Amino acid sequence: MLYKHLQDTRSCVLLFSETEAFGCRGTIDTKDQGVLMIFNQATELENIRNKTCIYKDTFTLIASSDFLLSENGISTLRSISNDTTLADSIAGVLVYTNGTKPVHFSPAPTYPNKIYGLYPNSTIHWNPNGTNVLFDLFDFPIVFLNEDDSSTALSKVNSNLNCDSTQETVEFKFEMAGRDHKNASSCLSSGTCQPIGGQSVWSIMKARQEEVADEMVISSCKIDSSSFVRGDARGGSAYQSSVVVNLAVAEAISKQTQKKHFKRDLMFTFFDAETWGYSGSQNFLYDLKNFTCVVKSTEDEDICERPYKTSLAFVKNIDYKKIKYVVEVDQIGTQGDVNNIYVHYDNSLVDVNRTSEIISALGSGVIKSDAKEIPPSSLQSFHSYLPKGSFGSVLVADYDTKFKNKYYFDVNDDINNIDVDEICRVSSKLSNAIYTLVSGDTTMNLSANCTFVEIIVGCVLNSSSCEYIPNDSNVEPNHYSGVFSWDATTRRTSSIINNVMGSLTLFGEQPKDVVSCSTKLDCPSNQTCVGGTCVKSTTYFHDAISPAFYFDNDEYKWKIRNLSEFATITSQRPSIYAESNWVSVGVRSFSKNYGYYEGTVTFFGVVLTVLSGFVIAVVRTILSRINDYRSSSSFIK
Image (cartoon, rainbow, N blue to C red; front, side):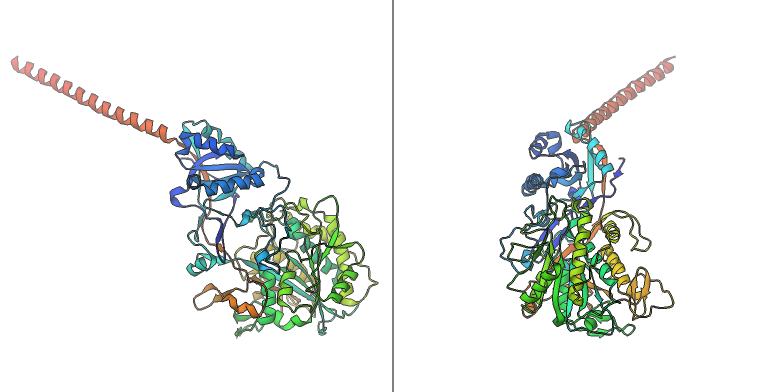
């Protein structure tokens, strides 16, 4: 057989929550290949069933992305999954690209992260296009093809529909180590999965480093996204638009730090793994209130060995009681007919006077949302961990009571789904608001650098290389958090943010000797790694992993804390999400003969063999008799 390996495939993966498994379980050896059959509507499944030359075998379904990633397509996929007989006959599902996108689609829930927030019983549908397919469980792999392989696969389908003598077959090798487990606790115990997480970034910006203000202003955003296929987590509006705005605000304000003293400290936070129950913001606030280093590093006093932390700067630089203002940037500049700026806050939770200060600083052109609840956001973590009414807060977004984004957590939420000019406009407005809050100066008129905005948009949403990543190469943008790692270089988005913010928050006399680095561990204790060079900066990474997890150094594995420990710390339920380990990854296609054809060939082969044997036996008998006759004739003579 001649195999063709399908390149650059992206697949649905197997994940676990506290109570269940979801995603795609992957393949098993007894059902890893199937005849290629197309379906782009539910009725075509019946046609496949009626093809007796096919249905007796395991088959591979192939569908267009615009069909499968639609309400009708998801409904059909669920029907297949719930039909045990049909599902058992499927080796996997291929999804081809045809350049068409649905009018709207979201694989996320209508209220993301609801059970981990302030309003677990809310009836608001922030994401009205949500299908919640992210949390469905499929017993077979679902793999998305690139354009070239899409064309190749489609060209091979017709022979199967016509029951030709050869069948185009696809073999899947997507083996998930945690396939047989039902929840995160079970797979973690067996070592077949790892916690989902990433690396958050935070920076403190001051006019003079030796001064410590009595109050702190935080400008915050989320940095991760997700999608039905994790490799397709583009996150244009949700949430790279907010990353760009937060960086643009920092860039604009950084130019003013040497001109006036701030009356308040300013901190920028970029939380990773927020998709997974606000893991980044939960862990940051949990550590601010509860962290204790048991064993410090003997080589670097800024590193804690147990529990492991690559930086203890948050212990030295942040007093959570001084947090008095929090402004979170959410989805901004989503493409649409009208561009509005809405502010969201919950009067029952905030310091009303300080919240009014924030709104006043934002100035004209902002609209108070009609929603009585805060949208899904890191703000929900702040209000869960910090005392009620102790700070003012608003969330700034381009939507009112439902997301403007029609492709929330879908591959189509890409660079074409955002308005870069609107992002720059909002960045200027927020720059002035944040600057007013930290300085008290209402006369300054800051403008965001729109060229800088365009560069950052390109870094996070284009497949071209980014100037803020040393020796960067062209990669498809993907903002899925993935398996947690202490190595921040595994998170490209976090690395970009660290290098930008690190260059904006340099302080003191910089090292005279240039030391190259990949991570902070390569630098002296009072320095950090920014853009491949060791420098002095007030920008740091922080582990974005749910505080429900802890690493057992003795057994060298992740474990889950007793969740009752959190009752006195926060009103928020800590999240538990893990991803299965991968055993093998790959897809290949090949042609082989149908069973009927092979049976026919075998039958006639056996018949011919028997006949050949019979003929040979007869010929041998005849020849033997002829020889006998000749021998007897010679004797008579």
